[in-house]
Length: 305
Image 1 (cartoon, rainbow, N blue to C red):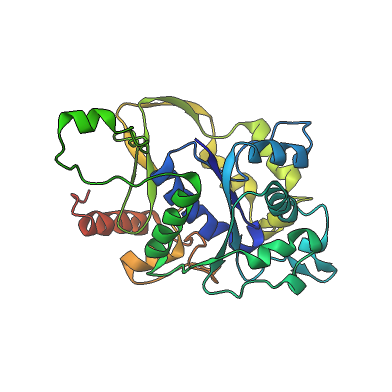
Image 2 (cartoon, rainbow, N blue to C red):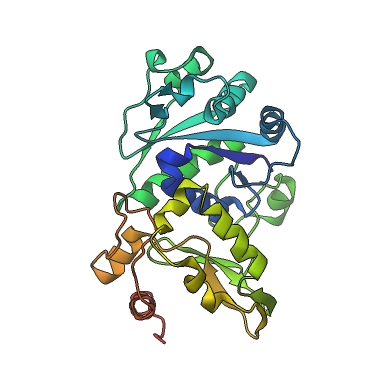
């Protein structure tokens, strides 16, 4: 089956792109969507790799948010011929693939004057709006219908009464493969969960890994956020690394709980770093997590712990 290529800029729309990715995988199958988290082989030219992936794709989704062009003090990233988003969309347009602009929260569609020459044809593509709020799932449902049109997928129809001879003569219509039972599920607030099977793993952090993090603190800008903390003391509970056995299966969310999801269940948002409902919720205690899970269980008519 032809895959779906999901193009987006991380600094612009990583959260909503992840939500769209989850819905597409749940509908079309776990191997149906290419996103930049998929591994790119070491030593491979990125542009050549993208073009190779596009050989197996039937449609590209261009997720466009308020900072899709990648504005900065030195110019726009989309104007750089080496920009990954520009390379992805430009390669799809050059190949004649259907390209669907996905406009987040009614952002304005770029005009030809807004785009570099290699992307000028994008301005004439029919776009779809996707809200991140209560209409998100409805809008993504419309997007899925548009993708099915380009991939030649026919939605399932209710069975009809027909004579055996007619049924035998009629060619079979290809249908989407059924989802694997109990492997993946979603809940009432849009979380996608996957089944973790029983097994064993190594829990904790080794002394070597902690030393690497301590060295990284000196150079990586994100690690400067922890400059006022005693990281050695913070990692005390991570040692020693030890084997843990999982004795029964359970379901685990494939993304952190977002601030919007936490707000929907708890009615509050305790996070320090705010600005988008798609940011992960933080500044929550263990008890806060238990209360969130119990209320979510009640909402989904499951038994609280």
